[in-house]
Amino acid sequence: MIENVTQLYASLHQLSSFADSLEGLRRDCADKNDYRLFPAMSEGYLTHIRELNEEIRAYLRQQPEITALAGKR
Image (cartoon, rainbow, N blue to C red; front, side, top):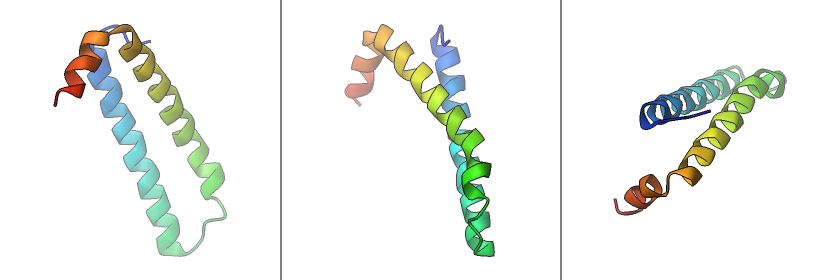
């Protein structure tokens, strides 16, 4: 559970890293023209992405001032 802005930024960084890793896996499968293992290999990344996304959303729901600031950019 995210408890402060520092943890929020760390979670956002992790989310980006998992997304980059998933994209790398997709590219590797595309280069080899072999997507048979992609669903099984990607499931762990997708699970982490879903979990982090939910944690980030839960934190932002509890911090309306952060959400308001993000909307002003």
